[in-house]
Length: 207
Length: 207
Image 1 (cartoon, helix red, strand yellow):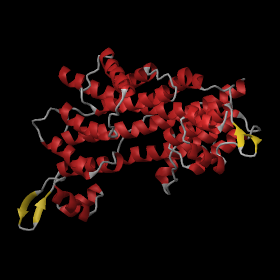
Image 2 (tube, one colour; image 1 turned 120 degrees about the horizontal axis):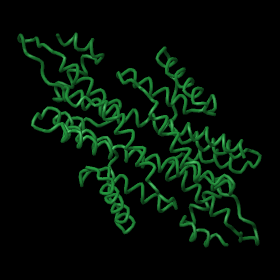
Image 3 (cartoon, helix red, strand yellow; image 1 turned 180 degrees about the vertical axis):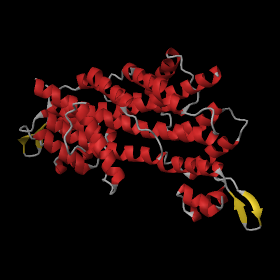
Image 4 (cartoon, chains in turn green, yellow; image 1 turned 90 degrees about the vertical axis):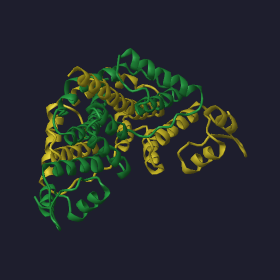
């Protein structure tokens, strides 16, 4: 298809598509004449991925470039390609000096070992969870994560990983991961607050 | 205790305490002399609450004032007082014009009815969830929320509501609600991403 059709089918404006081409986020079409190039399904998939990373992942263009480089590097195993996107989705957390941090971070590492989880030693989620634990302890919360670990495991095993098309095109797998992680995460957070409101109402009319 | 001791015990700097007093966030101490006032446990509890709302809830001072007004209005039932804090914790979502929004919002209302949840007809969580559903549909996700509803219900019923001291001081109940909602929510989100990384690794080495 021509670039105008690519724009119509994807819903992405022509100047935006040209910007993605210049930035290398979108691969070039096949040049069929001096001023004409042909685009195909792979370009549509890439535009869907860029949209997911921008609008849902809210990632900066620099992060998106890294993720797309991983998508295009066919020598990179799928799991590592997904990891590149996955790591970019979390907040950036800097370790804090002091014993509180050391304790919390050691607790996170123990949790990963106890769960027999395959989580990279340098995965940013480890520092992210440590930061939350430090805050919990400072403010006097027990920080018993066991029920949350169980809930997360159940959702991931029974639902979320089945939604990732591991064997399809690489763009589609990353897109599904990003959309699933962010949007179902958002839904879960809202549902939790709805359930809290309801349970709070019941407990107080019951007493 | 004197204001200097209140500062030392709470860890809140003296000028900050004076600012909270001027703004009406912290109730005045008992005037025992022209230049001297006595503070007690209720002031310590209030400072803990303010800190939770600011640092963990990341709420603006205008929202904090509303919440504290609800805490101080003893005629307001506990459930409604908690609701004031609870509603402030979510993002502000504006309904969008169009059929997609109407459909998603109707689906949310149906979900609340089917679950027999007591959620206020104007609770902002309803619009928040509708927004996520609209996005899911636009991007081609099935948006099957059932497993997330079950996870949320289980956590709230079995763990989260037991952590709220409904019968204690009003400040303490709101503080526990805010800390629990935000910090355990953050932990759950991180744990979900850790479990995803691990499960992704296992599925791909297994295949």
